[in-house]
Image 1: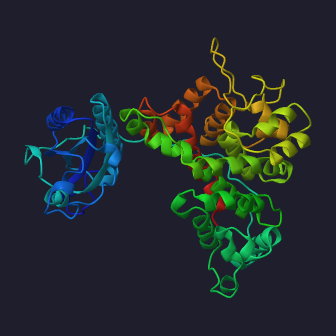
Image 2: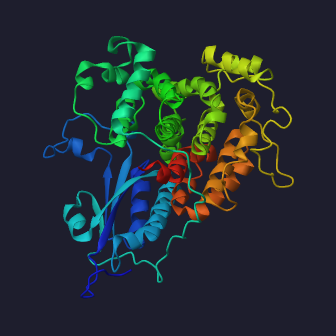
Length: 480
């Protein structure tokens, strides 16, 4: 589409401002020259935190917002694209972001991000401090024909059995769980206590269940950020997800919340992979993020124990959650992993988290995970889990592998591809993981931005995208 104007006028020119961080001035100037050669209209080079030394700037004398980049240089460039609506440009712009991130990596740096808008506006506000290239009419012309995204395959059968009550009944049921677990607001975690306060009991009623559950999720992890409050609230969320008194739809939504929290660390690591590599450091996972995931791992046995009673949508989400925490099963499970499932669950529920790798057998019990496995290519190298192999996980719910085969997932559907990804994660199988990511990228091209960097581990990328894959699948069935 080149225009939506009935008079046939071309849409306004669109612009993207890219920011690159480079380890020195020479690297920055080289990258700037290459961007100008690509057709970028404006390119500026400045030392990181340049405006902190400019007396006329608001930032003068203020502490650095990113002291880790002290001594680094930044490149700011403006690329202008004409003749197309923004939505039609997305596949092309995605390719440009991948290309420019690669350019930054080639000079030892990373692509820090970009901003978009109408070209006239962005050109007016572009800071010319350190301007090294200016070509007033330069454009980065999209190819003809414009690239398009492939149509996603048919999603498959709609999930069923996800009825829900009205918001008043849901609020009442959630509060009942809080009262049963904590008794009073004083004894509950801060992120849960508000449900037991008098002001909440007599406050304005919620108009929708979604609004209430959204407030609850935000109280537990404000804007998705894990804190100590989040760690303390995990048992409550798990209690909701495993309470048969709550509607099935609500419990699936809570399971999805737990899934998002469980992959916070890998998602952050995958997003910052180029930066971490450029700075020569190793990923340091925030303590609250790590402890949140471990708390979810401790709650997992109780959730899996309800497998037979759950809807298919809940089982699908539970399988993803199991994959997300499969490397963080506490060491106390090791002794019981080959015993009865109930004993294994009890051992896990009472064990203490540890940073030490779990010493479990490298192979799972025969047949324990056959239903989850996909056939590995002939000659594929054997792979082993580095912490807790899937055999330990299926010991907690031995019917998990068999029942996953019963989920409605037609071959070639997004759901089947997601299940293949889950299987690869549970097996810690790099070959299957690469195959699953490749299949997903074929119909989900946005994933290419995640997989383009050599610095993001495939497992991190897979876990980072898993919640969206699950939510896109179950989401339509969760809407009233």
